Image (cartoon, rainbow, N blue to C red; front, side, top):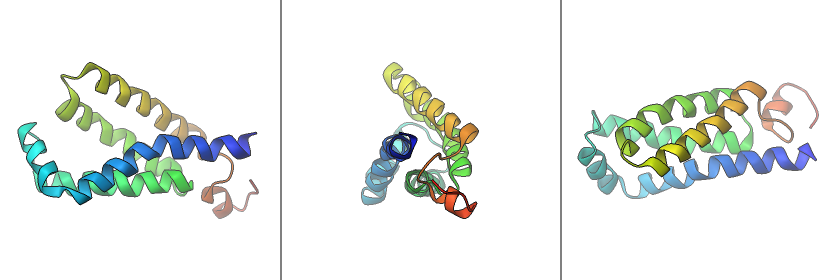
Amino acid sequence: MARILHPIARILLALIFVVSGIGKLMNMSATAGYMAKMHVPAITAALVVAIVIELGGGILVMLGWLTRWAAGIMFLYLIPVTWYIHRHQQVEILKNISIMGGLLLLVAGGAGACALDRLRAGKTA
């Protein structure tokens, strides 16, 4: 059962990051404008970091490659995102907190079955 559920769970958890990262990449000027409206400091650098973490980290989690590191960085990334972007949106805050819980599970337990981390470690799924 874990062989099926672990990769599905990773994909579902990371999907929001991948889609959001692609959206930011495809609409950088609009995203930068929104970030300015939200008083995000160092907008250009913040936008590049957001794209790299969301798209790169999301793909790594989906694949189960460097999962603990990627999930940990994504967890830390959500702290300022929640504060700067969603601090007045209760549902978005709760959504991010829930996602952070899922990311912490990956940090604590690893990618699980059918992950590239397991192949790298020489383990079978």
